[in-house]
Length: 259
Image 1 (tube, one colour):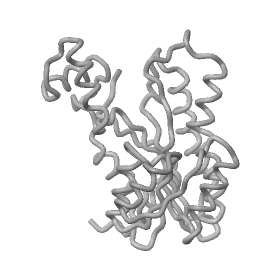
Image 2: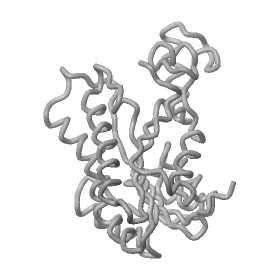
Image 3: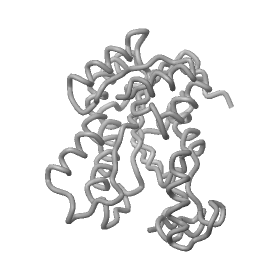
Image 4: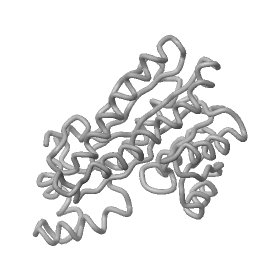
């Protein structure tokens, strides 16, 4: 299917590794001109070179850093697609171990970084009459657990942010949506998850461990962890002209998570 992304320019934040890198790669494969964002210069440049993209270096946790990223992103042309993927989490965090400052710090990374880029890029999209804004959040924003309470709260905020932005942008040609992700199996996560499975007696190799790990930690109706391509396909569709009737939506890509 032709997603009609040729001639569109996309900024993917937090794209120097993991899901952000996979999203940037997919958009480039679909014909978009991509700007890879990251804080680490070496990793960000490496991803950009691999997919023949440009790059923007900066910390979106501050207004100054956001200004630097914005300037680099629009240097070669206006941005049509903004994928706010920057985010942080701590699987060991609990109510007892997180301070009010921890909550504020995570909110700054997971929510305000997106707000900063929206404020800088969306007004020009509205003026041109076309644009796509996509937040990457987590299923925990809708089904929070006792652990990582501040992370769940930031993802609830991401979902609400996208819906509010859709109302703000009504009749403008610019859409705003969220992808609420479940588990994501990245190359970097297989080894630690396999080791975790062995420690719990769930098996020795990944094929044996995965279904038992999912049932114990992230029960869903598919019975496995999501693959990056399953998320990038959804993001690519939301970024395309084909998704013009979809806005204000939180699309759960979580295998039917029921924990």
